[in-house]
Image 1 (cartoon, rainbow, N blue to C red):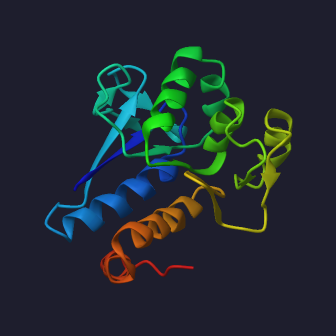
Image 2 (image 1 turned 120 degrees about the vertical axis):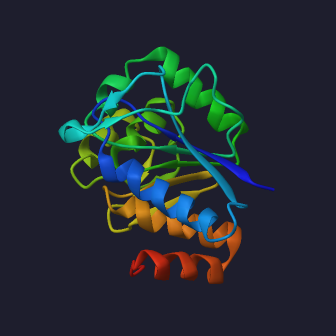
Image 3 (image 1 turned 135 degrees about the vertical axis):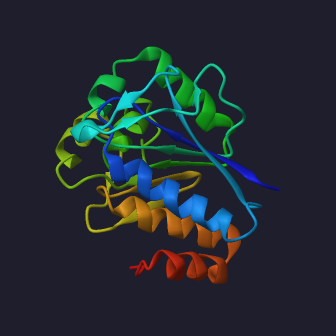
Length: 193
């Protein structure tokens, strides 16, 4: 059955944090008759967000109208600091995570999982410059700075920016098999690590 993949966006999200996973999951589905994933973006409100360095992006849905999410992808970026203070969004992430099969944070998106206590006692990755801040937010988490991504149950976290592409390929391989992941990487001309 086709899985709903929601990519959460916000002002000052890092572009490749959301565009990389969007491309991997979307291309995988495209190469398989659009049968595997329904990939869409979600934001707090249904209005354009301005990503890092000014890219304007129109989210597909807002948190109030978001359909059931099978895989939640949380982008990183400097805007995560403001989102950490938004109780409504944090509650949506918490509720969505509770019913999703997987939750992925890319780069500093791990801050939001840390703020919710979801990294307590678990290994995690984030951007190399964010580890000190995340140690304050989630002192019970177990940082893994030497890794590109890690899995802790249904929570997956990646290192900075481009590492989200590697994590996305890992999830594709888990769900769809090595041949599907390899075909997507070949099409994208991406050399997996």
